[in-house]
Amino acid sequence: MKFTLIKKVTLCCLITFIVSGCMAKESPSIQPASKNSVSAEINSSFKHVGIFLNAIKNKNKQQLSSLIGANGLIIQREFTSGNRGGTRGKAFIKKYAVSELTNNLGFVVESQTPVDLIWLFPDSSKKSISEIANYPANFPVNFPNATNTDEWLDTLKLMVSSHPEGKDGVPFITVSKDQKIIILTEAQVIDGVLVGALALLAEVNGKFELLYIWDLR
Image (cartoon, rainbow, N blue to C red; front, side, top):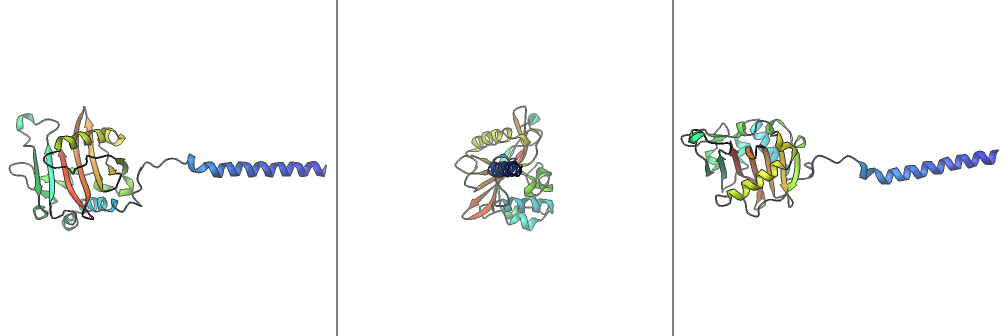
């Protein structure tokens, strides 16, 4: 009787040990995957997106100015959803110096509506970095400029349409594999047309700068 009891206890302990060991080995693979593909907490370059968002949220001109380098900021406005015979304004690509940033965090556009960063990124600025989904991405080799706008717009349209946030214009971030280019997106693709706003920050000579803003209406 005692021998049978000992066998039972030993068998139960052995089963418990085996099951516990299996669970310990398998648990990492069955943990739910993080929505973020890149950890904002361990990626120091993400802090510059945070500076951008915080500057907009608090209307802090000095903070935003710190992100614009000596080479200035390129802004591209396109009426991708239609221009109603030109009544909405003119599309343009223009480089602005940091000195041209207004107190309202905008840039003057002659004879039409100014570029208003607060208006362009209303939802992004209400969130912290940890609340914004981020994904890895492949970008064109060269930074956007006046000669490769079509290539970049095609890339951005594909990028936005590839993520669930792009269906409703929910903010998200994409980062290059070398983590030297980050794009904050508050845009969506509607009937094949990309509308909204995007901001590109990149590492230039060891420092992250705000290089490009897309204003797509």
